[in-house]
Image 1 (tube, protein in one colour):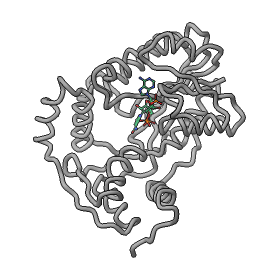
Image 2 (tube, rainbow, N blue to C red; image 1 turned 90 degrees about the vertical axis):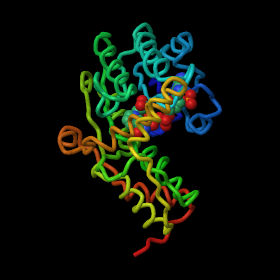
Image 3 (tube, helix red, strand yellow; image 1 turned 45 degrees about the vertical axis):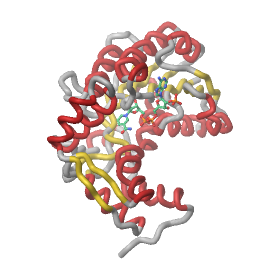
Image 4 (tube, rainbow, N blue to C red; image 1 turned 180 degrees about the horizontal axis):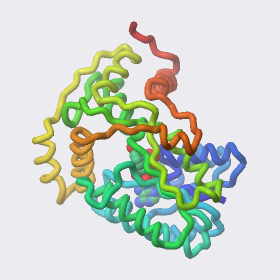
Length: 304
Ligand SMILES: NC(=O)c1ccc[n+]([C@@H]2O[C@H](COP(=O)([O-])OP(=O)(O)OC[C@H]3O[C@@H](n4cnc5c(N)ncnc54)[C@H](OP(=O)(O)O)[C@@H]3O)[C@@H](O)[C@H]2O)c1
């Protein structure tokens, strides 16, 4: 039995589906079981749980062989802030897994996680990596780049499709890497099901690097819609991140992450990872085409 914490999310639901397709037993933990009705229909056991509730983590881990930690609260504030969910909640989950005799723990960190990172979220990811490494649990750490689902679609493509407008933090001219959650899920499933993956720390990224402005142009070309693009200048963003920090740490760290993404090298070369793990990676253009087809119900007209 595998436990997927964050099973209703982009990565967690893709991993759950893959595991079920391969005949494994899967338990999905969610704060609200209503969110997992489709996964339940597909055969997953669904349990209510919250990373901030120790007793629920003990219940979720009971009788489980492997855990995939695929939850996060990057945008959280108050009781849902990253310090509670991403830091403490994950340490509690590691403890609960250990106490329940879980054999393998797969932690989803993030590419760039480091103790000196300008955004707290990436410092927390590093802190949890360290906690897991010192726990004595057999583990694998996944370090994916930005997901196509959130960084290309939710933040850029979706606003264009729904409103014809998009607002970018910074100029959006810095090349960066996007990876499909489905591809990261393949690494997660490999890690859960192959004992020889214990100890591995895997940097994961998509096959190409794109700037945010190139993503805008891609959505325009594939949807046939013209986008009105506005830019929040980085200087203003720095001030806003400082002002927001005390009352909305999630918003503040998303802004700091955006500054980091717009000003430092965000490119990724997947070839070293692929030499070790022969996984077929999804191209952004193919992913967006599929997304548009499922959202619009048919393939969109491609402007020449
Ligand atoms: N998105 C990216 O670009 C990206 C890049 C690198 C790494 N990652 C990492 O990859 C993992 C998956 O990300 P994602 O984008 O697939 O996530 P997502 O789609 O944003 O989903 C977030 C998940 O977190 C769960 N969650 C939030 N707060 C929780 C809490 N207090 N207790 C239990 N569960 C909670 C939610 O479950 P319920 O709402 O059902 O409770 C949901 O399933 C995360 O660790 C993330 O940091 C993501």
